Length: 449
Image (cartoon, rainbow, N blue to C red; front, side, top):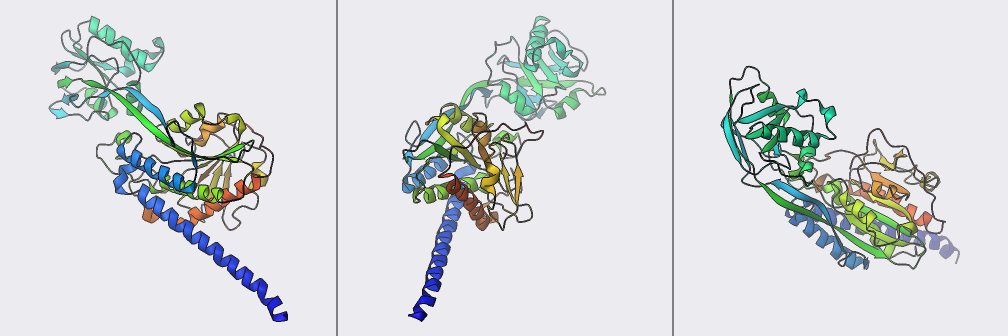
């Protein structure tokens, strides 16, 4: 009996350790399966509104169904939202300068009020002639006369048309291409002539005092566009008084269409953010199998993150649950590159006075870097704006928005470590009162999205 007395604790401990290791191995295998699929070439970078985004959404739905989550979208697990609606350059849109074809969206952008017609001519620098194309140097215009930059371009175009211009080209504008492209989502009265904004490289050509003349041939054509995204929402209903939201975005950059680059490169987005979705699904699996029944849990895979967090903003404004009953929100964005020297970065610790104590002792063998702010261009901001305590988990900028962000570079053990910190927090808060919310100062520089 004495031998048995000494051996039993050893046997029990060994069985417990082996069980834990087996559980971790299963989770690591699942993480690899999720990330390998979501970042595969088949999904074409998961750009919001593209076929690859829909394939990713279908995969996430299938995983949520297997876990046993309740669908909480407007169409099963899905919640569709509009990212943008307006106009975009049509395939027939063209601009030729000195017999060189310019790149639409990068070197020139039709303004939203532009007439959709052709114009051509030999244009002299510093000489705007009737019945010809005008070149307008924006840097020489008194912008204080106008409410907005778009208003400036619209009014100057009207003036040029009245003076006999056949088209107007604005150069030396301070805007970036992305800002001008965004104007195409606005409804504006149509002008009588084509109006085009050109980027800095073309502006330098048009501002060259040594140029004799410019041969310009343009055909402006626009077409309506509507881009929609899909959030995927699953729920664990424990009939509790409060709910915890765990979120991660699954969209990425596709072939770089929104980066205004000349060449199409596939952005697989393994760390950004297949890693966050993989962690979210495995945390959902663990919570569903647990005895944590004092809270409900809303698991959300957001799309539209790369479009100014449009998916999380839409959900926060059209929530399937009462946000007044939400205890807190955790955002998992790029959690696949944990490096011991840089550590795990946790933002939002200033959004509740309870976070500091709750995080005490988490991941003892991992360096943790804290940031108090609840603001940053990632999806937790949408919930912080609703006075909900948030935490933002992030492991660094390596390969951020690079084509080399691939599954073979993921630190899966590190991702498991992040998961354990999150689960520990969920466990600690299960029996506690609702967390108080605190405002944080607006940051001077935003966290990465």
